[in-house]
Image 1 (spheres, rainbow, N blue to C red):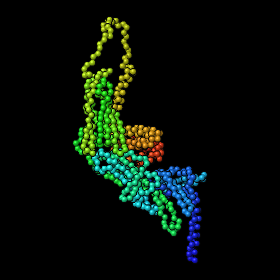
Image 2 (image 1 turned 90 degrees about the horizontal axis):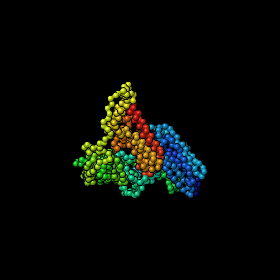
Image 3 (image 1 turned 180 degrees about the horizontal axis):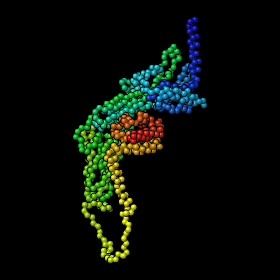
Image 4 (image 1 turned 60 degrees about the vertical axis):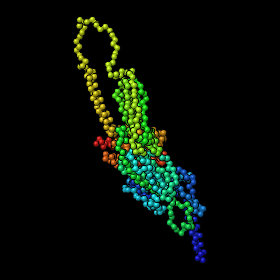
Length: 610
C-alpha cells in the first residue's frame, strides 16, 4: 500500500512538472542587468533575452540608444537550446558591455525584436550611477567559479626574445593569449602596455587571432598571438614593460544546486553565462647595457647591421647648374631614428636641406631603407672634390663598431651660361657708341630756374621712406625666422597645430577610401605628434601618461584630460586589436580625435594669454 501511494505521488509530480515546463515555454523578451547600482568607472553587462519554444525566424533586433552610456562591447550573441522529455525550449541573448558617461540616475530604454510578424519589446531598466572606484569582480553564485579558477585556465603571457641588450638594440616583445575556456564574444582592451625608456614600433600581426595548440605545465591550451612590438632602448639600466590588460568575455556553464528532481529531469545541455574577466599579462624586465667606448667620429647612435652607398648624378657640369648626391642606408635596426651622414662640401657650393625618405618593413625584425637626396649648386668653376662620406654603426652581434665609406667625388665645373667667378677680372668688349666731341653751347636764354625740387615732393618722400620701412620689416622677419629655426623646440611648438591639421586632412582622405589600417595609423600620429610637438616631448620618451601630467601642469581641465586618455586608448585599441578597425565607426573616431586636438589648442592658448 505504501509503495502504491509513493508511485502515485511520483506520477503526479511528473505530470505537474510537465505542465509547468510547457507553461514556461511561452514566448517572451526580457532585459536584465548585472547590477542596478554601479560606479561611474565600472563596466557592467546588459542583456536582452528572447526565450520560448523556438528562436527561428527572429529578425530586426533593435537595441536601445544607450545615450548616457558608452558601449564598450556588443552586441554579443549567444543561444541556448533545451529538450526535456521531447519538449524544446530555446533562448537567444544579445549582451552589451557598457560604462556610464557621468553620475546620476538613468534609464536604458526598451529593445525590440520580431518573430513571424509579431514585435516583442523589453521593459526599460533604471540604473543608478554613483561616484567611486570600480567594484572588484566577485565570485559568481550561479557559476560557483572564482577569478582564481578562471585565471588558471585563461591568461596572457608576455615574452621577449632577449632580456639583456645594448642601448638601441631591438627587443621583440610578444603578447600571447592562452585559454582552455570558451570566449563568448569580441575582447576589448582595458589597458595598453607602457614602454617607458623605449622607442616602440608595432610589428605586423594578423587581424584575426589564429589559435594553435600548446602545452603549458602539462595542460593543453589554445594559444593565439595578440600583439607584437619591436622595442629599442633609449636608456640604460633595468627597464620594465608594463602589463597588457584585456577584458575577455568568458562563457561559463552554470551549476545548479542539487535537488531531488536533478536526476529525474536531467538537463543534457545545461545553461551557461558570460563572465567578464580581466586578463593581465606579466611584467617583463630588460637589462640595457651602454654602448662600449671607442666610438668613431662619424657615429651618430645607429645600432644594427647596415649597408651604405652614395652616388653622384654627374661628375662634369657647368657653374650654376644643380647636382644631386643620393645617399642610401639599408639594413636591420631602428630605421626611423637613423641620422643621415654629414657631407663636407668644399667652398664654392651652395647646398640645400636634403630630402629624406624611408621604407620600413615591420614584419618580425625592423628593417628597411633610408634615403637622402642632397641638392647643391656649384658657383665656382674649376676642379672641386667632395671627400669620402662616412657612416658608422654599432653591430650588437659582433659587439663592435663598423665604419662604411664612399669613394671621393671629383667634379669638373665648366663656365656656365651665366657669369661665374674665376678668381680674375672679367673682360668685356668695348664698342664706340657715337661721337665723343660735340658743339659747346654758349647761350643759355632757353634755360629757366626750376622753382620746385623733386626731393620736396610727396612721391620722393614716400620712395625714400619705403625702403627703410621694408628693411625694418625684413629685419624683424629675419630675426623671428632665425629664432624659430635656431630653437627647434619653439619651432615645433609653433607648427604643432599646422602639422596635426595636415595629418587630419590625410586621415580624412584615407577614411573616404575606406583604408582602415592607414586611417587609424594617421589619426594616432596626428594626436600623438601634436602632443609631442606642443609639449616638447621627444618621440622616444612619449607616453600618454607623461603628456597628461604635462598638460595638468598647464592647468588643463581633468575633464579634457579624461577625453584625451579615452580617445588615445580607443584609437590604439582599434589599431592593434585584431579585427577591431572595421567594427569601429571611422567618422566618429575622426571627429573625436579632431575635437580633442582643437579643445587642447584652445585650452593651452587660453591659459597662455591669461
